[in-house]
Length: 428
Figure: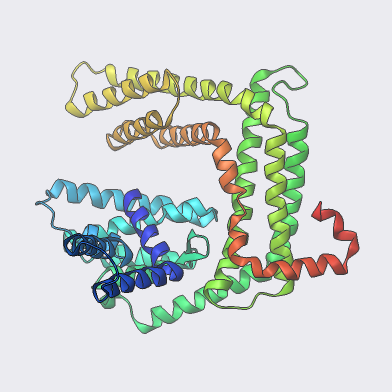
């Protein structure tokens, strides 16, 4: 699903890059004109070989069908077991992201929700399955995610992507559903813009409270408990990232939706978006100022979470080893637990985290984990991932390079500051 998502992202970025497509067309026309001119000293065979390579590159890349070419290629006969496993994965991922998108506006979650969609398209085309129920479940995501923010101003509407990727979508979609999608997008933008000033005030208070807590944070608290101090720093780190992601998602969604839907943006909305951008830079500066505290506690936090995982694994292994008659699934689950324990006893790098997630999935599918145990593992590994990659995640969450695509709003803001000299300190 992640690889399919990357292919869709490439298709959308290249397809929406009008300048790149224009230059590519001009480049191909220049090569064609070389054949008709005698002033260029070239080898005819080499030129034709080069043109064939360019034609192949155009079909594979610039036509915007990377994803379609991938899922429509001839594959060997796939087993029913693989089909059932894929169907289970799609259902599980859809339920997970359906709940996640209902409670969060994080761009990463919205982008990750594209993974089960691409898997559903692959499943439908490869096994020739027309699942109306799952199709409607994916279609209804547009009520919470009108657009998926791909890169810069490029936004992908899920409904349009479904319609052009699945030939049978016309059987499930009528004119009323299409009209509902258009109305939903406009209503979403209108409601978001209407509540923008309230959201700005809310985020201002959250950032101010978070900054004051970060300034007073230390590894040891007043009572000298290192454990409590570590938990507090971990909570502050995660809370700061969550606020930054929510602010970034809100401001980029508003600007990009106005751009995509060609709706004029009001001066008040522009000023609110600038205030949100200032909040992002405030969070980034605070992380930079307290870099020493976060760096000093990160290794201790990882050790603490690793110990929790190891203790939980020992408890679960004891339950499985009580029965002296092992089944094949029990042996697989015990092996997955041993693999997790081996990975946690060492540096928690990217490959080890991926292996741990796969091993936990084996134990979960083997029904060796209760809902509480599964939730505990998910939360712990989510925290470990945040802590080990918090610097890159802070940079990504506080990245304001998207303002380049909306630089036309800069004069509005500077005119506002010029007419209100009391705001000049903001430009420092």
